[in-house]
Image (tube, rainbow, N blue to C red):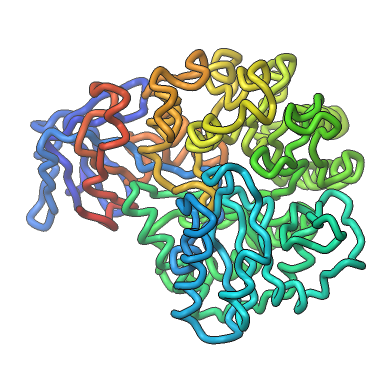
Length: 529
């Protein structure tokens, strides 16, 4: 056998491989694992140039795969105004005012990720921030990305005013006089978004580098990116320049499926660093923005059931030919009605195109009608979930939808009990790309306000091993890459992390405090604490 280029020894390895669940050492040659076993076996593969890392008995797992995030947006937001934990109106305004002093007049202020539930639920308005942003257009989003606040300057640039008509599948919040408050939701958001200047490529590459460095520190070795063709262009250039430190599965908008089909026919689907072939679209909005689509009205808005941002028939007319072309489809659905409608479309597509290994996905899969678990299983639909959302939503969801619907919110245990695969991610920039916190969330369901120490809807807790699978092998399955990564076994890519505590042995509530010590991608150390 060839000599190893890297050996990890004295480790407590969770391989994710049911045929060899535990090991003490592994050996890497180049990008791939060549042996997994005891320290005595593996040390025999050392050569004169082998790098040997003593893990000190620490926990080693496959590298984490964040199945759903918005990578470049996350990178850009790292350098933008930070509003996620602004807990009062005054703090919200103060942070924007301070940020204005660091930029040039005329520069757009974006990102933010504010959360109005932290200050009691009142939505911000342009009047809050106009005085501190007289020369800078502002377009800062709520943390879920389904509504954003524009200041008066941004509305003027976009031409949004009292005569602007309503948008199907979107909302323009207006005051008592019919004037826009600055809050736009879902399909109304492009009215302002489309006027933002395009950042230069230099800033896009800077955002990519910042994002890669940030997620590598969190133990992330692969991502599922939800974005645009321009994002894919940036990824391709970085890939060609050998700059990637995270493996990327890039998804592009569903309406562009003919362009993607042509690219796949001409170039294939990429390689183990950059892959394409997935198509993303939306059925509804979000719970926090009151735009998730439900069968029954919101408890705090009894005449309102949410928004469908796409017509069901029109969505089928995109999905069916895209699926026929062999492309993977991923649809965002959060409310129980939206989820059910997407399942209807998937079922109709299968009936039209016939059975195959298509791995349909529903992104978020947050609120379920009881009858739909079996439909996920029967159609082979993957539930692409973000556990951090669970411990965030649990702070405020009940007044919106009532306790009975909360019982089937983020229903991870029910999915697994019905034989449905979970692919776990973060939805970054919406939530932090921190798999250890995601595992903590899935296992404990303790809300961020610490008001549910036994777990919010504790019946839906899952085991640490199930959560690890959702962030490793099953997330790899969701991108058709389970044959090359997701477990630590011979022949697979050498992507793994070293963690300072055994997640399977410590009290679940202590997982939040564990730390990544090292991240390895393709046999190369990309982060070391």
